Length: 274
Image 1 (cartoon, rainbow, N blue to C red):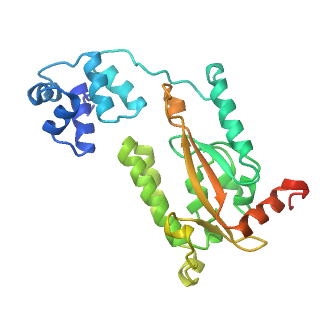
Image 2 (image 1 turned 180 degrees about the vertical axis):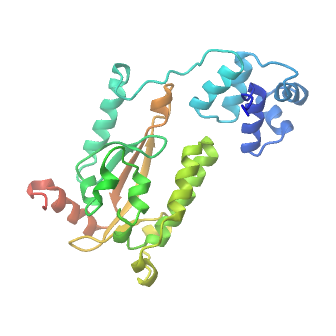
Image 3 (image 1 turned 60 degrees about the vertical axis):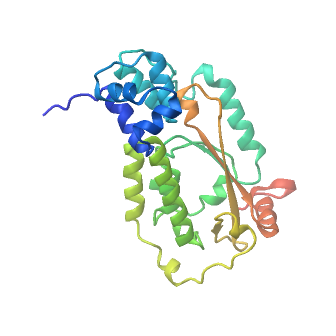
């Protein structure tokens, strides 16, 4: 049986419910009447282009999904969706490259909305040490590499804490985007076994930084490597692809990690380790 395509009203109602808003609350936020919103959601009235944009912006609907609602309402998409290697995005690619290279000798990488690796600096190689080839061939999913038994899971000293953090963050991404591919990825990550050493290892001692953020603590040749991560996005992007690019930068959480990374990556005259 062929399903009937969702109407603009259906999609608007779905996003309102996803944001856990009543019709009255959304109508007040969008400065329209509840009666008019009810008519739009039920299909008794058709939204104008401006009304679609007003409601989707109020609901913080991602640009890709805003385009889908515009099309369902009979309008052309507003936001361009170009591949990251398109000539028009050359300036943005340059910004990404400068951020990644400028973060050396500490790891930094760029991912798309599905956590597929787009670009990275050379320090990311330290994180990927020992990862199985099948996880690094073709499109590389950063979360899969992080949680898979053949990835870096066995090196993460605070694996249970990091796993909880990753699953919560991915769940938040799903709430924001309603992306079915992310939902499938979440279920896949949940199915991965916990490394044997994670259950037996003593919980890493908490320091000041661990009280304000979840660190990534990896076993390394020169001792544990402890990182805090930050996220950077293009806050004013009006291109769908660019709006979905995220840069993850890892900063050393202690002096020992900073010193080890400088040696491992060859910063300051040292040669990278083999």
